[in-house]
Length: 424
Ligand SMILES: *Cc1c(COP(=O)(O)O)cnc(C)c1O
Image (tube, rainbow, N blue to C red; front, side, top):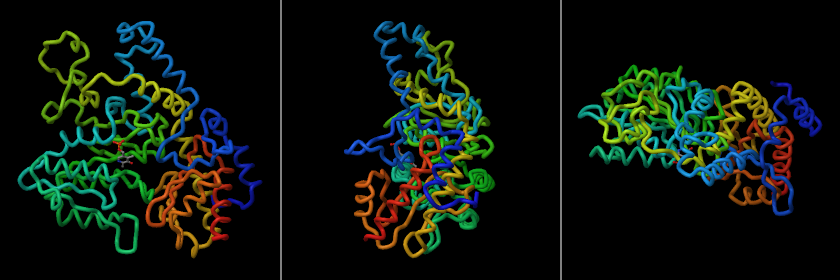
């Protein structure tokens, strides 16, 4: 991994020898105003559209046109059981058992539904621990849960913070927090991969620590699903949630994923919000029945799901299923390692990579702090066909996605960045 070389010819050779190179052709790559193919580095924000998505959605539109309500049972992919056909693929992506996974709602909604069950404050144990730079939606959701339970939403949140002049979280600091406040904390809920720094946390370690202190532990895997090997089952986490429109390429605002550990699958004592879709499938349509809990993650569903969005998820998961996370993460490590290698040539007084050095502690995203930069840098990059992401005050986030980004993309990105910085 360390024998990367400079020069475009090296990048082109890597692409040629890439066993996943054909997958790029399965995606629509955006073009700039001059018709040139963009260097797309924001698969961490909105994944690209698989070319087959349209036909998957059209299939459902056609079945709806031709069958009407009969489509629930007679469509090519019957709608009643549509989500079940996605469970196994999704479970593989996040390293879970099918019983533990369901696709439903949207991400923040799932976070709330999980907290209805897994945030049960008592008089003495009622606080929630999050990372200090949590994604805003997660922070707002947590604060509103505290208010919902009549807790003070400010003192109810305990933050796991990086040390002064550092960006990354340290486990020692989490241990210290738990030693002091462990008995007050009802729930630990952190991002598996931080959206800003790209740090991939050790889910198993955090879960073990949390459980030792009697806390429930959940993860927001929005930046992890389809990006890193999450191994949710083995992590022992109580629950996890993620969206499908980032690395999972399922379209803007598409449905989200939810994981509930097997140990909770048959519990009837957990408080939860329910609907007819959480009820026993065999008797769901008999109506007027007493509520009977479905086991596993499916038991947290409420409604019959939007099939058009499910179809987009299916189009994407079929690709993931074919490639498998093992090959994806293998290429990802190589591609991002190469990206890091090229960036390092720019010199430490020009840029600083915030994301961890160790490939085990990150996914494909690198967050790059650029000295003396402001948002005009982002504008200049966009002008030369690079789609990246700017975070105030001075950070660009770029995510070379192994399914559709190339070594050439990475080479050209760094080359363009270098010219912009030299001419600044
Ligand atoms: C993308 C993202 C969200 C977005 O939430 P939605 O409910 O899908 O709008 C929330 N949390 C994290 C950590 C994210 O990365």
